[in-house]
Length: 287
Image (cartoon, rainbow, N blue to C red; front, side):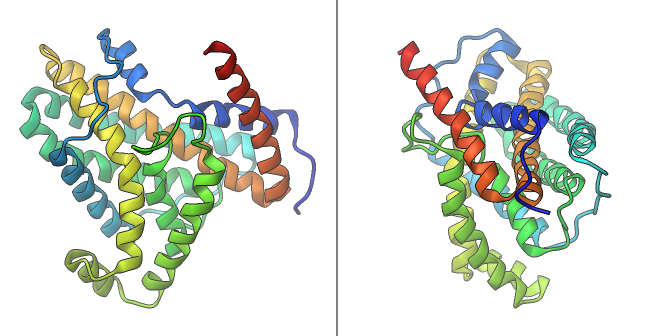
């Protein structure tokens, strides 16, 4: 049934989602985690970081057209949200452990660790999607999982006040639909080969769009790990924040999608937009 009114819990969830998506603050979370002032440290993305982020996303894309585990649907929205948090915890723990290795080895460690961490997080995102009732065997849902890496971080050319979750999702949805048509008409092997050869324009466009935002957060992670005396312990804490960042994005994104199925998109987006306007007004008053 759609078009039913939002409950107080649903409205609070959307308020929290708007607060996260419009002001995610990953770098500030890292600064709080390791006690180092990092504001403004990652304004420009080094080419090598962009290449590494692109490579990690391509591996995740291969997972998106391959096999990922399915997850049982939680009975209601509140249980789905709680279950998603528990599911994300175990993947976050694995990502934290890989971050410890990356932090200890510096830049060479990031080359090995980032693709591994991204793969772990993709599985976490897919599991979270499943708890909110998504069919993770559906190619479109798997590409939605990949698109989560574009959430919770601004694009390099975005103005913070204009970076709206809703407007970005409208643009991303078309890319996902086009990529789904390509994936759905080919075998897994053919899609993987097209990704490797770069002969899949729809998938390339999707990856490029996701990468433009994902690489901003990867750049922040790299610069944080480059601070002297970070080491493996702080590297693990940084990865814990990195994993938590995208797990949270996944819970809010797929939570919003489930609310849309229950209440209708118009109702959900209107409530989200109301919270977004209130957040924007608050930021303007501060400045």
